[in-house]
Length: 321
Image (cartoon, rainbow, N blue to C red; front, side):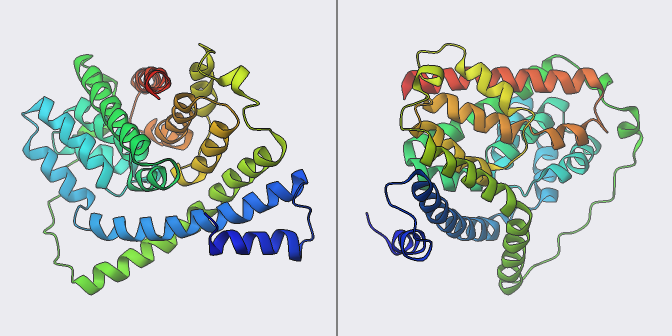
């Protein structure tokens, strides 16, 4: 479908920059302009809308809900994974949230269910997946991401690894609960705009890099060219994708344009989504920050369990899609 965004991208590429419609560079630049505008419009709308909705679920409320159910471990895992979707989260908040949960007496495994779900299964990922790939893949991604978070948290809880949390975490005095201030509707709307623009300022470079790589692939890598190496028939493709994705750092907005082009180039959908899960769910900055509160054995266990879950999910996606 021809849209105003496509018209503008065509105008800039072929009338302003005088690039040929049949050239690889023209195709790459046209893709970059079109996807940049499309992705940022989607991000603006999605982040603002969901930020307003989740203003009713601040981290402190999440902590209180989980603390109230800390005796019901299995229910706690499910609640933690679900609350991870709507609770504001970034790598920089991983440590204070972890400490706050431990202070509240929330079981270690339940805490990890939240920490796994929050960055991997979030509103931006869901909105963009729906917009770019459709409702089926968006729902499958969310469901499998939640299952990974729940099962991984349960396994970590069963391993009884509390002794591998840095000692000072348990020595901290639990901060006094502060009464949640009533926030007016106008304040929520304004705060949502501020958060949206602040987040866009922090992630725009990752988004541009992801779209630029996607543009390069669009222009220079023919459709289906990678099917031989990363298609469904390669049994090691998912494992390699996860290994490559773990040390990288991006968010859903930055990696999704690349995921879209990988699938067009012949990479199996499950392999591409496993790569996305590894990048967003096992980010290196989050691991570095979590090392402040986790001893190496627990941190390594966390990475291995989640990575195995992502690999299995990638194979499952490749089987059913």
